Image 1 (tube, rainbow, N blue to C red):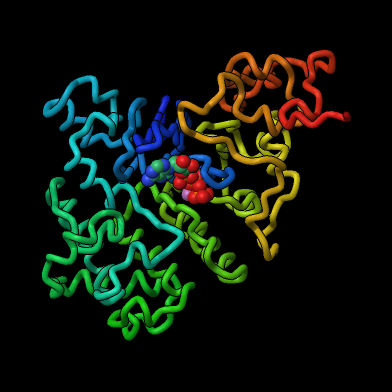
Image 2: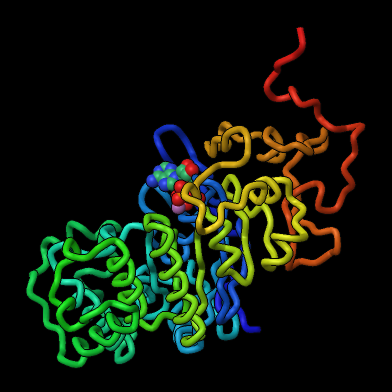
Amino acid sequence: MTDVLRVEGLSTRFFTEQGQVNAVEDVSFTIESGEVFGVVGESGSGKSVTALSIVDLVENPGKVTDGEIWYRHPELAERAREAYDEEAVDGEYVDLLQLPERERRALRGPDFGMIFQDPMSSLNPSVSVGEQIAEAVEVQRRAEANPRATRSRTQGYGLGSLFTDALLPTKSYVSEESRSRAIELLDLVGIPDPEERYDEYPHQFSGGMLQRAMVAQALAGEPDVLIADEPTTALDVTIQAQILDLLSELQEERGMSVMLITHNLGVIARMADRVGVMYAGEIAERGTLADVFEENVHPYTKGLLGSIPDLDDPAPRLNPIEGNVPSLLDSEMGGGCYFADRCPKAMEECLEKPPEFACEDGSDEHAAKCYLADHEYDEATALPDDYFTGDSDE
Ligand SMILES: Nc1ncnc2c1ncn2[C@@H]1O[C@H](COP(=O)(O)OP(=O)(O)OP(=O)(O)O)[C@@H](O)[C@H]1O
Ligand code: NI
């Protein structure tokens, strides 16, 4: 299989008044062409920031501070070899982090489609739904004709572009062709009477229909990679299932790769080919769906799986693991394993240094950042239950 994306040693930090927040720390994974790569983890584990780092949408005071993001794009690679540093190119791959901002912006839409939890954050409330999709089609057309195309009034809406959007005229110039394509897309994602719905505004759509419209908008660019961050979390379970089925269908039909971010292991089980489990800004474990669900080694993965919230579960955000997620403030992060204080298998070794990525079978594909990945559990060095709480009998 060809990798479409290779993320290597990615670190993203926020430089806040309280100090440096290590939101994403040395994260590595690959996404194969045509697969669904699931990213799962508790709230605050760095899933969204990882995605935003890929599409260059990390907001101030955040910054990608380290790593490489190799994206397969033969034409761009050829051009970048001439135009930029040769180091930015590796065969058919370009390191996105070495490209100028305008190149990266141009990849949003035609290369990286995005769907977020809240459609209202990506759709402009004052432009009709159909027109916004038609604009995304136009952007794709222009990108094909000229790789340095400008973006539409709505692309990236709600992600820092609010102010500039407000300055732009509200009348847009959408070609007849893009309009019909938008209607086709509305139909494709299962919106009834697409021709009539084209002219309606976001507030006239229900949550599920809006989510479908956002899928249509993301597809308009015919992206290689669709990044879906909690795409169904806000929806009720029946509609959730419908949207996931729709995504599966479209993904298969188009051979698109999908990075699917979710809290919900039920969604992962249903959709993902391979999985990255995130904790405290790191990948705690990664592997195929079977590796992670059946052969997992990290006690955090086991903890998450302890109560798989399935799709019919009315409370899919239940946190099954006792204790709290650690602070990601650099000054407050300990020197050992970040999960040690919640880990039922914590041993003295876990306090000494951060665990390395390893797997008992030596595979690189299935690996966990846990001492237990390549060591036996040893009762003799196990930490007592009250080690971190300090509660003792007397
Ligand atoms: N604007 C910001 N300023 C400071 N810190 C931030 C900012 N955005 C994110 N972070 C930090 O990055 C960490 C990771 O956030 P992220 O949004 O990636 O988590 P997540 O796994 O997507 O969580 P959720 O499931 O709740 O969406 C957070 O815990 C927070 O500490
Ligand atoms: Ni998130």
